[in-house]
Every structure is written in structure tokens, then in C-alpha cells.
Length: 295
Image 1 (cartoon, one colour):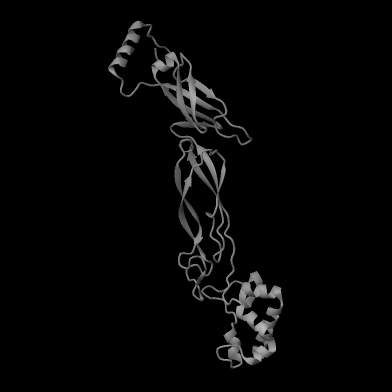
Image 2: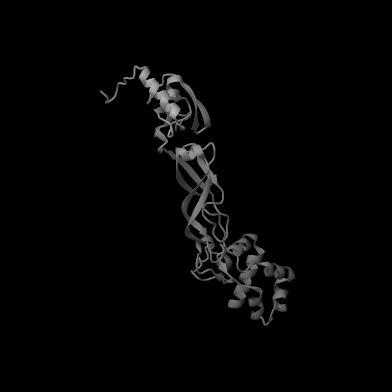
């Protein structure tokens, strides 16, 4: 009676496209659908052609009795059914933040960062199976939680709050399914060269005393590449020169400004001639400097 019950169940599955699809996906537990979860360490126990043959003494194939009941076409359909088809699902997308300094954004290049995520199982290669058995490492899921290192090439036009989509760097799929994507939000922060106040950026710009006295053109590295800064004659140390719309992006749209903060500096290796000229400038007077804490 049990054998005929299984035969009737097989016929019911093979003649109904919807039930056949469920059987291909969930095996003998097709009636339970997605509510069924296989026991850990176990595989699908689905019927195969040899099981039917053994019921009716057919040895290594289908018996004549089975063929007379179902017909050759249905027999070939069942032979084509997969006995170990696993459920597959695309991996979830991952959202993460990466903090870069403004100097990182200005200079570009590459940046490595660690990411904890779900990865393909190293034992079964993400299939969830080892031969005809469930992979013992991932319990048939095809993935495990782990840590990986990601290398990012910093885009030239990177902006604070920009979201980068890195395809295939999200969570591994289940049962060998497609890997999800990584959505990386960039956060820019100040550093020794560039200070941040809201969307405005302040950058120290060293100039020689004679450049400040006579005026000069100085190359300045910004988020938009190298720009030429005009230093007016008579510029004082600490003076702010404003470059509009070269700062960071505002949340409400638009951009802040870049302020070049002038810092007087001497060359590290001043020549004898330069020292002589400075001495002559001192002797030419007036040379009294006032302001700040100086008396």
C-alpha cells in the first residue's frame, strides 16, 4: 500500500507543472514548500528511478509494470528529474561607511579596508554539498560568516556622502546563488593639511616672505584638482584667501568654500644670497613688527 501511495504521489507531481516545480526545488518535502528546512547534516531524500525499480523487481531500471502504468514519456520525465537540487537565493546587499581624509580624496590612489560579511563556504565552494551529502562546514547553506579585505580605487571626483556601488562584494548567495553588492558611503574628515568646518575646508598654504611682499601665483591641490592661487602683494601670515565652491558638498545641495590660510615660511635650505638679501631688507628698515603677543 505504501509503495502504491508513493507511485501515485510521483504521478501527481509529474502531471502537475506547479507541483513538479515545487518537487524540483524542495524534493520529497514539496508539499511543505519554503516552510521546510532540512535537518543539519542531512541531504534531500528524494525518490529516484532505481527505487521504483526495486519496488517491482526491475533491478537496475524501470520495470515493465511501471512503464505500463505511466507510459514511456512519463518515465523519461522522471529520469530527468534532479535528485539533489538545492535551493538558491541571491545574497543580500551590504551597506557600509568608509572614512577617508580630505588628503586621501585629493591625492586619489587606492585604499584597503576590512569588511565583515557572509562569504562562500571554503569547503564546498558555495554549493552547499559535498558529493551527495550536505556540506558539514556550512550545513548546506553554501556560505559562512567571515572577514575579507577590500581594495578601493578612490575616484577622482569623490565627494563627502557619495555612495559607491561595488558589485559582487556583498553577501554570498545561498546554495551557490548570486553574490549581493556593497554600497559604500564615503565620509570625508579633516587631517593635518585640510581642516573641515561643515562644508568649508581650510588649507594651510606656506609662502616665502618675498612672495607675500611682492605677490605670487601658487599651485594648490584641491578636491577638483590643482588650481592656481593668486597671492596678492602685501599678504600677511594667517590671512584667508577664499576660493568659492571648492569645499565639500552640502547636504541640501551646493558646495562649501575652500579657504587658503597663508603661512609665511622660509626655505629649508636658504642660500647665502637669500640670507644676504634678508639682511639687507632688515637694514633697510623699518623692521618693527607688532601684533599678537609681541610687545
